[in-house]
Length: 216
Image 1 (cartoon, rainbow, N blue to C red):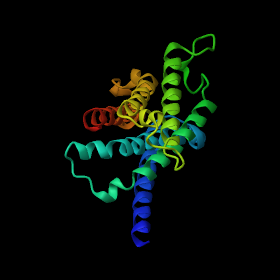
Image 2: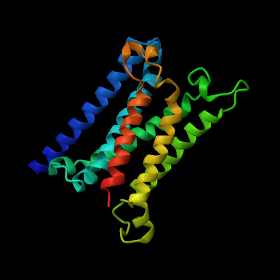
Image 3: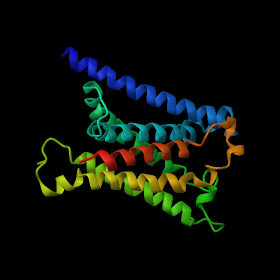
Image 4: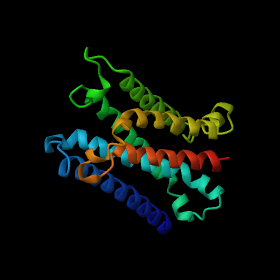
């Protein structure tokens, strides 16, 4: 019982620190150094923070075992947090999806819309990558329900290396088209802080390579 409580506290600390750092960075970059109104804090800024925290937790969840396979020493205590990190990351991703759709309008994302008000190619590809990656995530985590047979061919395919890489690939598409135009405009970075989309893309690339090389 003591070990279970200790593990829960360890998981909570990782989740809490990740969330606070991600949200704090979003506030610092966009509200403090940037020009985004404080009125946008509850949805627009929180959405940016929760998206970064979600990606970090999911990447950590997906990458711990492959890292161990690559010879990196991963404490058992950290390995045992994977389920909590994955569930929380998935919940954050769901919240990010809902909030993003709620504010998907030209005034927030002008590059995603044409003059006529329809989605641009960039906006469509970004949305496509986000929705498809979420569907893969949803199917992946549903496959771990206790009453499912893990030996079933469909379940084996869902939890395979290829499926994990598909999830990460479509996340990468979403992130790339979300913010690639501002990644090299260093003089426009508020306070010299890189965009959250760029940080997220770096996390994605790291996680993708780790899973590509280390996942069996």
